[in-house]
Image 1: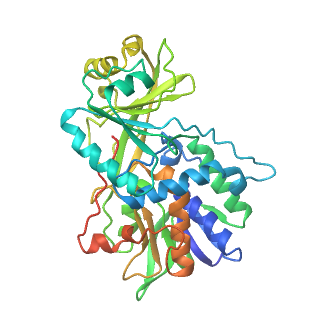
Image 2: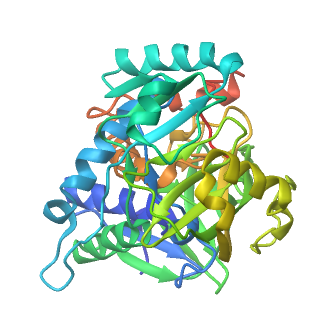
Length: 389
């Protein structure tokens, strides 16, 4: 390969989705994905809890979720191949945010934003919550916000692989290598330098490097406030069924949802240093955490921790929102980074938005311009308040 129209650094779900949409919209485009971890052992795409919600506080995130749920429901039509049918196991029991009295004002504010953006959400009082979820203790809960449709979970690694296989079927090349530098000619990136030696000339470059996006941006002299933020997920068994269990967000900060015959759960980390090893932090599972779970769901007093894993949020420390679009000065360098824990659910829409921006000069299907890089340079944070964990 001596030249590519587009080089995408990273072939996780963001890189794969972008490659899919680019070659879907312009089949003649020569697109190369450069990926060092082709088994995706450290990729957030492989380690995500893979859930989707409409309950955000930034309307742009709600728009991305609305596109995302429609895409997931029709994934086979978009991504299916004769030898690779797409089965995502999508379930939509909703998200349920619980609020204690001092938290209800924030829940009302978020609810108003969500309803105005067309999200199908409802506020429920304690009596309604007891009726819907008799296994749930809401004695200290003043209000709950439930997604009535368009919220749930799915097989994230299967979605990633479907994007990747479909993109490659459309002619995208995947190069097993690592980008170690970006060559510049004036205000353009002219080539990516590879760990194996040599370089790959290109017309456009996409930074889709997930938790390592800041390191790739620095190769072009660009400061990008993305950090690898470790999160631990615990797999729990419960002796009693929890009928119609949604993805539950407790006022104390932990979350929990079904996963097959088990439950998975996580909480805010006890260690927040950047780039911690991808090993579960067992210190996060303690008597206090167990007591909090058992308080909210009495059946969990008899739970058992089966195992745990850790993955990275690609955390945008500036405002917890994605960065999508071109660099204002290096015009052929594009970003699709910093989703801060909600990347898997937004990959379909974000990939389309970026592909349109690259090919058409603007994102047309979903308005994402406010997620552009300019807000970083101008110190204009667009803060997402509904960040879980």
